[in-house]
Amino acid sequence: MKMSDGVEWAIHCVMLLGALPPSATLSGKALAEFHGIPESYLLKHLKMLVTNGILESVPGPRGGYRLARQTKDITLLDIVQAVDGKRPAFRCTEIRRRGPCALGDGAYPRCCGVNRAMMRAEQAYRDALAEATMKDITDEFMANADPRIVPLGENWLEENTRTPKS
Amino acid sequence: MKMSDGVEWAIHCVMLLGALPPSATLSGKALAEFHGIPESYLLKHLKMLVTNGILESVPGPRGGYRLARQTKDITLLDIVQAVDGKRPAFRCTEIRRRGPCALGDGAYPRCCGVNRAMMRAEQAYRDALAEATMKDITDEFMANADPRIVPLGENWLEENTRTPKS
DNA sequence: ATTATCGTGGATATAATTTATCCACGATAT
DNA sequence: ATATCGTGGATAAATTATATCCACGATAAT
Ligand code: FES
Ligand code: FES
Image (tube, rainbow over all chains, first blue to last red; front, side):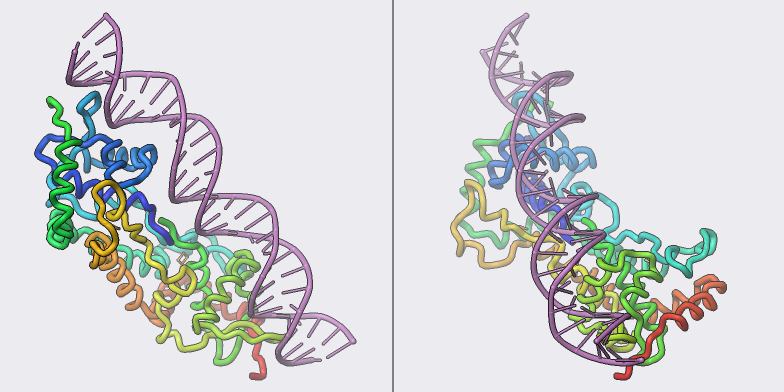
């Protein structure tokens, strides 16, 4: 069971976009360059973040991506589900209805207890992710970062930030 | 993110093996037949359960598989980790160390905060799975099963159960 | 108006992983 | 001896993840 690498990319992108002034943007190219990841593939994930209302996109020159809401209102769960989808990892194939001792449909009114237990565990997972806001993550990230990174990052942001009209 | 179908197979196999008299076994062929799943592939997962000390295997005629310990001492987590592995679903690729603003190794003494948050969520998931014992799952399963299944299953078990010498 | 920049969406290719099958081998009971 | 059973390795097929490319519409600068 492996989660898409795009999740790590997306979280760090949201973290970086959270450091921008209001309404300013970063282009997909800049986001890819900053993280050293392939642009053409990152765009796919950014699009998912736009579709799910986490990012806004601005077309045209001086356009790019920016947050659609504050970091305190974006959780890790939002990003994970946007990039990796909302389908559960455990997918019951109704194995109980197969084989020589199975009965016809109708004999299984309730969801299989195994499935329910797995769902409970995944819900605990989602609850934990929903507890983690991007504001908390970002604050903690900056507090623990090497002090040399701060001016480096600020300088890079100055050169790459765009401010569209709308 | 999708979990191996083998997990569902393995859980239901353990549930069935829990209904056997002590030291009795079911062959891999019988387990596959009962669940209507491919035998050759199921054997791979059963082997993992043996390796991880959840099942015991008995070779030779009248041989097969049986539980290595009581169902109350087997949790969903044991089975999930045996079949699907213990590696975390989220695998940090240290994206923070790439790109133009990254510093050399040594500037990152602590694990990335994003990674730590994801690990916390996965730990909550594992904790929930560790709470669910196969005894509880099985009891609940039998209590909610269609009454017609009980004699059917008992009959099938009688015909397919083996009792090896050791 | 013209041009350059940027995100969107679809098509496509490559790599990695999952799923599935097969066979030779050793162990064991009849 | 012989038939049954699990083990392990090799291998193939199917599915998913990763990555690239290009035509298109929108926008801003000139
Ligand atoms: S039938 Fe799918 S988990 Fe039990
Ligand atoms: S660098 Fe991997 S999660 Fe932050």
